Every structure is written in C-alpha cells, then in structure tokens.
Length: 368
Image 1 (cartoon, rainbow, N blue to C red):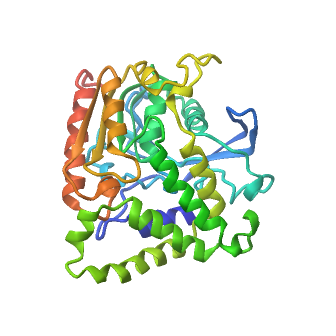
Image 2: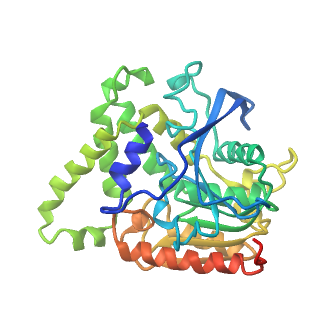
C-alpha cells in the first residue's frame, strides 16, 4: 500500500472522501513480454472499478495513472455528476508497472530492485490492454489520465486507434522533452548519490535522497513562481513549507527503485516509436504517429507547466485529426491537474471533461 499512501499524502483534496469503488483487484498474467524482448516474470496488474458495466460492455472508461501515482490519481473527476460520470460510465482504474501496486522492482521476488527489467510506457499500455481482454471489453468510451497518465492516453490512441471513442489527456506529452528528462535525471541523481542507496540494494529508503528529490520535483518542477508569490505573502515562509513537502515524501514510503524505473520509461517515451504489426511505420516522428489517432481527443494543460511543458500538449493536439487543446486558467503549473491545490481549477477541468464526454457519447441510444 505504499503507492496509495504516497498519493493520499501528496494529492488528497482536503475534506474530500474517496469515491465508492470495488476493492483493489489483481489480475495475474504470468510472464509479461516487453517491447525490449525481456519479460517481467510473474506479472500482475492491480486495478479497481467504479460505476456499473452495462450488459453490452459498451460504457467502459479506462483510467491510467501518473508517475508514482495510483488508481486514485484523478478521483477528482470520477464519480456521479463529475467529468467521468459514474452514473453512466464504468471506470476501470489501473495502476502502472512500477508504482508498487502493479508488479514493480519493489514487489518482485525474482527480479527485485535493480534486477527488474527496463519497461516502457507502451509496455504499460499493453498490460492494460491485456486486462481489458480479461474483462471481455473490446471497446472503450474513453481513456483518461494526467501527467504520465496523459502520456499513456496518447499512446493508447496510437497503439489501439480503433478501441476508443475519446481521449482525455491532462498535462500530457507525446514525446518527452529534454527539459522533462533533465528534471527526472536530477531526481534520480538525488536518490542514487545518497550513500544509503547502495547501488539500489538498500535496506532502508534513502531519506536524504528523497528529501532532495522532493525539492526538485514537488517544489521546483511542478510549481510556478507566480503560484508561490500568491501563496507566500512573506517569502521566507516558503522554507518550512518546503520541509513539509520533504516530510510528506519521506512518510509516503514510495520506493526509490520504483521511482527510478518509472522515470526511465518516462524519459524514453515517444509515440513515434510505436510499431504496427511489428513494423516501425512512423519513423520516430511523434506528429506522424499522432495523425493516425482516430478518437476525439481533449488535451489540457496549465498555463505554465515546468514538468510537462504546455507547448508539447498544444503541438500534439494540433496534430491529432479531431484533437483540441484547452488551457486550464491557473497559475499552478503542472499541479493544476492535481487535487489538493485550487478547487476552481478542478471545477474547470470537470466541467470541460463533462462537456467533452457528452460530445463523445452524443450518439448513444437510450439502451446504453
């Protein structure tokens, strides 16, 4: 439950309870082949659901999660009357490879820690596709996610263009930028240079490394100067706030090898590298890959995102034939699409997603 605690500590909306959902379930898939040719042995994917699947199995939405996040990552837009309205929709809330709930470096007994094979965002998508096959779901109303979840959403549109009607990608990238890679590199260095890390074979989490990682990610890369100016009338008040961010990360118990493994996948993501029937048809060009998407696509970013630059999302939306990009009117940067910050931002996102989903489902018959 370490990943769950991590998300709740950092992303929980004060005063908001979790929506009703089924207990966490695990689907054992045996050995999971990776696009590298390696395999994750004894793989299982963890998921839960909200809403009711109709008899035709035609009202399903797939939720995919952010880096180090879990199936609660976009709870703020899942539920009755929300953007993903569970009075009408059946939402399958998944956990990504390496988040500590689905099979990860921290949980594997045969490929533990640094022995875990490198995986990609496309491998995450394929594990989710196998889950849908197990559930007997052949078509989705939409795929939705934020941050690395938004990146998986775009990959879903390229890898399986016939499977969904809509894509909802918050703070996404189609190809990871040099800036984002630099941020992740700094977080990895913070963990790996802590003497407690011991080459990934640690007996306790590298606390000093996690504190520095919090300074890089929670404080600098996912906030904005203007948000901090508004938050701290007395500038020196930011210092105890930074300490609180560090404390929250340390208390979360998220695993260092899990973080490093997910950032490896994050850094190397490019939808242009997708193969179709074993052939590299897009030549590494992400825009060419995005032009193959058949679903309607809604992409949203904050006005200044220092982790997943907004320009990447705008460019991606312009390439998707039925894509559109909306800017969240927020100074919160990357965390504009996260609970626990500004309710007005979440209200805007919910209203926008709700309208988009009504457009996606406008041709539904009354029996659906």
